[in-house]
Length: 238
Image (cartoon, rainbow, N blue to C red; front, side, top):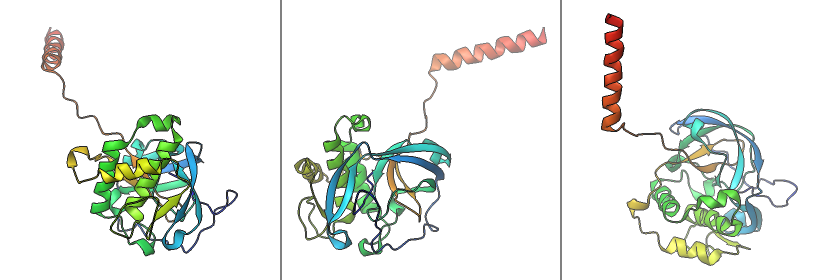
């Protein structure tokens, strides 16, 4: 996620409508601290009320300083999905991606259609190597592709041209457009453990939570556990 700024020294909030998340389904909370944009690049955003907004693009990192519920599974990185606010250190709600709020000019919430395209994009094209800073340019393209899905107001996805959302200064923009062109609603690619953080005080994030273990013990393991229990019972009777 990126820290969106009109200058690199300060965050300027333009036309922000703080949207309440009281109606969102609570999945947990997370204490986000120590924001860092070291895995990000820089781009300029256009369209709507974003015209000329200089913004960090790509992976954003932080520290998960504690959480409740699904918040305990929030990693130390993600992608921003709210372009008119800066990072916020503090407790944030963890909510379904479909219910993530957006500025009023773009409609709210994200909704299932856009959320599903993001899930497919993630399943098809996300590369964990970006988290190590292996390729900022591709992580930038991926982040901008997410924004194109969320913020585009026309019927065509193109991260480089309007009339809706678009961006300049994106070195792998052609790759972003290629990824977007492949999206067709194929549920086989869906990354279904994507959620969003939400706070009225700062930027919201798209995050991939760690799926809970659903492993089932192998039959031999179950047999050995049963034999062990029988042995203990016999010893106690003796």
